[in-house]
Image (cartoon, rainbow, N blue to C red):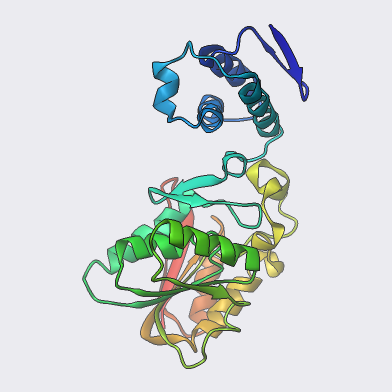
Amino acid sequence: MNNNFTCLRLVGDNSIANLTFQGHQLLAKTSDSAKLDVEILLSFVLKKERSYLLTWPENKLSDEQLLEFISLLSRRAEGEPIAYLVGVKEFWSLPFAVSKSTLIPRPDTETLIELILDLHADDKVLTCLDLGTGTGAIALALASEKPLWQIDALDFNTEAVSLAQHNANNLSLTQVSIYQSDWFDSVDENKKFDLIVSNPPYIDDNDVNLTQGDVRFEPKSALVASEQGLADIKHIANKARFFLNANGQLFFEHGFEQGLEVRNILTSLGYKHAQTVRDLNGHERVTWAIY
C-alpha cells in the first residue's frame, strides 16, 4: 500500500516494524537520532511505552493513527524538535511539559544541577532564586533533590510561568514559588538568597547556530542577548549582588566559548573565586562565583 501525505511516501503495510524502518530511512537525512525519533513518535501516537514497539512489531496502526504519525514525521523531517511534537522532555529523570514559549531543557544543563548538589551535599536548608526559569527545569530539579530548600523561580514570559507552575503541580513540587518578573524587578528588595542561578539568553544575534537545528523553532527572546550574548549575564551579575546573602553564590549556564568572559565579568564586579565547570562533552558550560 502506498500513502503520500505531506510530501512523505510510505510503502507497504501499517505495521510498527514497517513504519519504524521507513521512518528511520526518511529521517536519517535530517536527524542524528532518526530511529529513536521514530520510536518516540510511534509510542506517542499509540500511547504505549517504547518497549511495546519491540514486543509487538507486527501490530498495525489504524488509519487515524497513521495520519497522525505521518504528520508528526513530516514535521520532524522539517527539523521541528521531538519535544515540541510530543509536548514533553525528560530532564533530571523528570518529565517536563514543554511548549514553544520556552526553551527545551537540555542535558548540558544537568551539569549545573550536579555542581550545586555537589557543593551543597549537606542537609543545610538554603534559599535559592532561579532567574528565567522557562519550564521550571532547574528550580524543580533542585527541589526534587532538596525538598526543604526555599526556592523562587521567575520568568518574564507569562506563558512560561504558567507552564512552570503546571510542571510543579504535575511533579508534586508545589513548594517552589513561581512568578512573573523581568529579572529582579518583581523580587522583594528585602529578600536575600544563598544561591542565585540562571540559564539566561547568551547567544549573539549574528550567531549562525540560530539558523540550524532545534533552535530555529525555539523562542528567540530566550536565546539571544546583545553585547555578543553577554548583556543579560552582565545585568544579572550586577543586580544579584544586592540579593545575595554574605558568601552567597551566583551560577550561570553560558555558551561554550564564554567562560573567560563570564569569569572576568564576575571578578570585575567584586565576586570572588570565579571558576568554570565543563559539561559531559568537555565544553565550558557553567561559571560560578561567591559574593
